[in-house]
Image 1 (tube, one colour):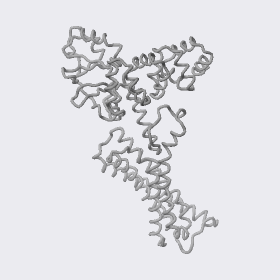
Image 2: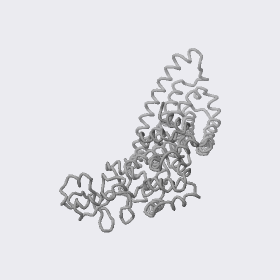
Image 3: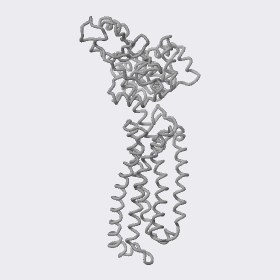
Length: 465
C-alpha cells in the first residue's frame, strides 16, 4: 500500500493514532504531497486528527492556496498557533493567498513580532526580492568575541532559518561582512568577530525582481542572499530553498507564456485548478492568434493566379512556413535563455542580431540547397516522367526549384533574425520576452514566410499575381 493510500485508509477508518504515526514517520514534504492528493473532505479530517506542530510542518511545504485552505478549516485558536510556527515568508504567502475578508483576521492572530515581520514583507511587491525574503536571519557585531557571538546565536537558534551564513552589521544595520558557523566553531573563543569575518557585501535591493535575485545567487554561488533597503540596511535574506522555488516559478511562467498561456498561474496545480481557470488563461491568446493567422490565408488568396499557373508551388508551401517557424522559435528560445541567465546586456542587441543573422543564413543556405537539389532529382527522375506532377507551358523545372531554394534561404534567415530580435525588443519595452515566443512568433513568421515565398516566385518566375 502506498503512503497516500495508507493515509486515506486511516482517515476512512477514523484511525487517528495510525495517521499520526504515518505522518511522524514521513518527511513533512512527503506528508504535504499526500495531503494534496486527498479530496476536500479528507483534507478537513486530516487536519482535525493532527496536532498543530505537525500541521505547521506540513503547511510550510504546501502550495500557498492549499495551505490557506488548510488553516481556514481550523478553529481560531489553532489557526493562530499554526501561523505562529510558520516561517515569516510562508506566513506572508499564505496571507496573500487568503480571501480578502480573512486576511486581516490572520494578521491579528499573530504575535507582535510575527505581525511586524509579516506586515514588512506584505509591503513589498509579491515577486520582488523583498516579497520573497525571510526576516529570520542571524547577525553579529564585529567587536564581539567569538564566545559572545556563540552565546548570542545560541539564544536565537530556534528562530533563525539559516545559521550557515551570519551577517556582521555596523551600528546603522548595514552589512560589513559575514562569518560562517565553522569560522566561529574552529577558532579561539577570545578572538574578535572582525578577525574571522570576510568582507563580502553582496546584496540585492528589496525592490529588485525575484529573478534577478536567483541570477545573483547562481553567479556568486550563494547559500543565502542578503536583501537590503535603499540605504543599504539589511532587511532579510533569500535562502537557497526560496531560490529554487523562485526558479521553478519563473521557468513555469516562461514555459506557459511561450505556449501562449496567459493570466495568473494557479499554485494548486493542474488537476485541482478548475476548468474555467484553464479556459480563461488560454482563450484570449488562442483567439488572438487565430485572427492573426487569417492574414496568412489572405496572402494565399491574393496569389491565387500564381498558384493556378504553377500548382507545384503549393507542394512547398507547408515546408517554407514550417522551416521559418522552427528556426524562428529556436532563435527566440536561445536568446530568451541567454537573457534570463544574464549572458548579455541590452547594449549587445546588434551583436546578437548579427550573430543570429549569420546563423540563419548558414541554415537557410543549407536547407535551400538541400531542398533545391533534392527536388530537382526527385521531380526530374521520378515524378514528372510518371506523370504524377506536370509543369505548364515552357516553365523551367530548374527555375522553379531555384526559386524555392532562394525563398527558403531568405525565409529561414529572416525568421532566425526575427526570432532573436523580437524578445530583445520586448525586453526593451518592459515586456516579458517569453510573450513573443512560440506560437506567437510562429504566427508572425508564417505570414511573412508566405509573403517572401510568393514574392520571390512572382518575381523569378515572371507570372503576374
